Image (cartoon, rainbow over all chains, first blue to last red; front, side, top):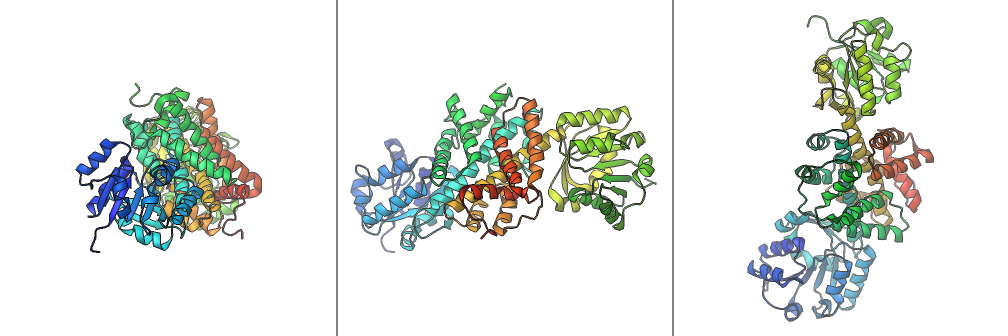
Length: 300
Length: 300
């Protein structure tokens, strides 16, 4: 390539900022945008290109959208000043937010009408892996969309799962992962406090379970937050109201009965209703603890 | 030691037979008993000592009880021809069944009245690890009980978690592990069928999730049974009616609200009510599949 690959990241939260930084490290020409101009300025200081989105959109090869949800994605793509109408033919939208597969298919179709490619590309791995360019991407789209997005994917991901030749399966797989992750975080809270109620220390529970058949990726990752009494948000309780809400919406539409997801969602709703929505999602343990009269570390 | 350590294993099911075989490999003098005389004969053929329990009980150093539940444990220990009354002072009962901590404490107290030691020693790891002498034991009891049981523990376990100086915490920790394990098996079923309902193949779900944050020990272990459509029981559905039933009993007694466990238990109850109680516990996926019109591998 003679000209550098030009890519904009829209949404510079903990995931988006990490992705944009990873794109920078790969010597791409990277533009970063956020509703917070402070975040955008912070990114430009790290090497991001200057210029309004409206001024540079026509020259972009790819747009990576890392906003909160489907509504924000639609607004960025097709709202007032939506970016898709300003892109050149053959440019690709890499859509990273968690959303229903049907919504991803709709976005793909609307992009296609404007000759823009769309990659259904939800991400997994958390902020640290985003910053390291080591995300997992659950991706689906046409061969052309994959090819057009490749420089960005190579820069942001350690693993790209190729799940289908049109939008949908990426979001579907993400919903499966979020179902499990959400249920497992809630079951971590249920199990830790159940053991404490029986007089076992949380340290001992963590030591034994992390070496036993009851272990999960989420137990191993989140139980230490409970041990430390540290609920500074890596991923917040309210993220699960959104993500398990998406799972339940898909499930209802598909006539799929999901009782564990429903139960887990209600525990996160109770955590949020208790004022812990912006705390780390391990704070779901506080709901169990309060309901059972268990004192958690940090609450003595 | 001049005389060999003499130990009886009571209960020669998939776990007990493996434990008894591991004890044999460690050059202990091992007696094996089961309500099935065929199983007992099979064990004697492998090197088990001959002789009725009533004839050898007084000479035993340890009795490892590997029966299904608390009722069977009580019957073996204190029922008609109960073994505890026949043991010599200082002999130890190693109690491996899953039971409520309060029941374990009661067994310890009743043994103590007859000068018999008691180790609260639920096991984890499955039949293969039992046969290999590589179980995890979640153990609690007096120093004397641990010391008396040591040759048996060394032979049957890779890891012995020492959780307290009297009976109870071993069973409590096991209940925590079973809560998680049961919830994670049911969530495996929920997630696999949820993904399939959205058109993803079970192979692809397994490939992605086993490398993602939604993974769990149980997902990785049980999802392959669904992929293969093979429900020959490693651990049966009905085990979870028992073990999650114990969790729910403890929870109610402790006034501990456990909504995920309750939801998971109901899915296993539905599986058992559908006639799949003796199939592998991964058959909980069949409940979800039938409720959602999903065809599982092996059902085409």
